[in-house]
Structure formats: C-alpha cells, structure tokens
Length: 344
Image 1 (cartoon, rainbow, N blue to C red):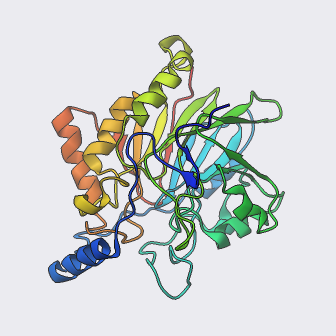
Image 2 (image 1 turned 90 degrees about the vertical axis):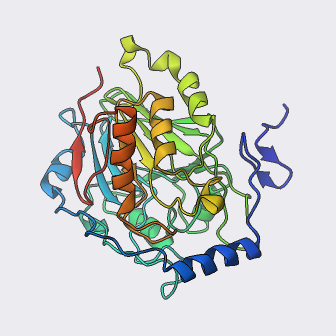
C-alpha cells in the first residue's frame, strides 16, 4: 500500500501547508520586537475562576444517569464526561510548560481541579508532544491514580514516549483511524484521530518525527471535537464531510461540543501557520457545523504577544459580526462546568 501523503521519509507533514520551521533569526526578530513594545501586556482584568463542582464531577463520573458535561481545567486541559466515561484532553497540571522546573512559560492560574481531586479518569487524548500539551509529571500521576491507569490515545509515533515511562495502556493512531473504548453496560465510545495543521517536537532533533492532530470522540449521548493546536486549513471541512453520514439530522446532527483554541495567536506573521486566531476559530466552528463551541488555550500560559485576557473579548466581537449567539461559541471560567443536553 502507498504511504499516506502526510507520511514522509523522516516523519510527517500537514495536508495543505508544508510546515517550515522558523529560523533563529525569525525567533529573535519576534522576541526583540515584543521586548521593545513591552508585549505581552498585562491583563486588564483577572482571568475568571470559580470553585469546581467536585461533588457533581464525582457523582457524574459513571453510570446511566451521567449527563454530558465539560469542565475547563485550564489551557487545553478539559474534563469531559460523556458516554459513561470521564476523559481528559491534553492534561497539563504542572507549574511550567517546559522540560525544566525552573524555566519556561509559567502558569498564571492554577489548575481548576488538582490531580488528586479528579474523578477516576478512563480516557486521555493527547494531541501532540509540545510541552504545554504533554506534561510528564501529569501523565505519571494519572498512571498512578487509584483504580488503575487511564487509556492514553495518542498520535502515531508517540506511544514510545509513554512506554518509556513504563506505561503500557496506550494506543497510537494515524489520521482517520479509530479506537473503541468499551464501557460496561453502555455502547462503545469511539475515539478518532483527525488531521490538524501543526507540527511536533520536544527537543532540537525530533521535529516532525511524531504525528499531531485533533480528536473526534463519538458516544451515543455526545459527539465531542477537540482541535488540539492548529492553524486554519481545509482539514475542518474534511472532518465534517468524513463524518457527515454519522451526523445527519436524524442521527443527532453535528458535534455537540467543539473544544477550539482561541489564544496564542500573536504576532500573526509568526503564528498563523500553526495557531489560529479568534476569527479563524469561529470559521472552524462554522466549518464543523458544531452545535456549540468552547474556547480554550487562553488565560493560563503567556506563550505569545496578546494579553492573556484578550481572546474572549475578540470572541465577543466576532460573534456579533457573524450573528452567532452567545451560547453557540462561549468561554468558561477556569473551574466552570457546562452541562450539555444528551444527544438524541
């Protein structure tokens, strides 16, 4: 069989834009311009935070009475409860998004729920291996959770990183591949890796050697989409078309909730190929025909030039310009839970 177009002799590539790593000169140009202009500027208001509903999260963790719900832990980490399982997206609970405990982007808001206070996690999806999305201490803590390790579903080539931590409960997928998660007494939950426009690396010599992507998590009571990190591309129309036969109006329609990044976008000349801005996040919401979307990947780590609190303000402007209702694409306070109507 011929290799898929995104497979290369040394690693992987995007579907529609060939990722070209930025040069050291580009990085220095960006950082020097940011320093001259005093960027990122401090937030004009505190990032919203609320105490998590721990009792609800625990009682809602399992069983036929479970209500689909999402809780924003911070950055790209979301606790989703659906299909009889509790799942985490890109779990990062450490103080820094870095290989070092003493340097690198520092967390500005603590995780909404401590690892020890989480309900039992059945499933973890990891979009790619950047340090603000894949955190070794968090993975090791989840492996040791009472009741046993969750299943980790990861992009192609990344399983070796987990087995290097003596973690065996891991499945790696290529784009469009799926894995069923059997839930006793319930229909299976299907986890599908879907394309995104990004890249991978954890060091200087492993760029593009492991795959990246988003996830479609399909359960009888909820269809969830998690974008991971991505630039804007036709991939999202491809996802809608690929799943169209499973998301007809008679079968419940499109994604019940899409978790879309809305932060880490400035300056555009540097970030546009790898990170969407708010306007592009709204385009993805429309491309997917999602019933509702939650804006994530903001307010936690200062990774780029925009203020931490700017993305929700831009989202409000984009919603108004496109006549999208406030409850169709929204943000949550860190720690806040949004309950979803079960899919019918």
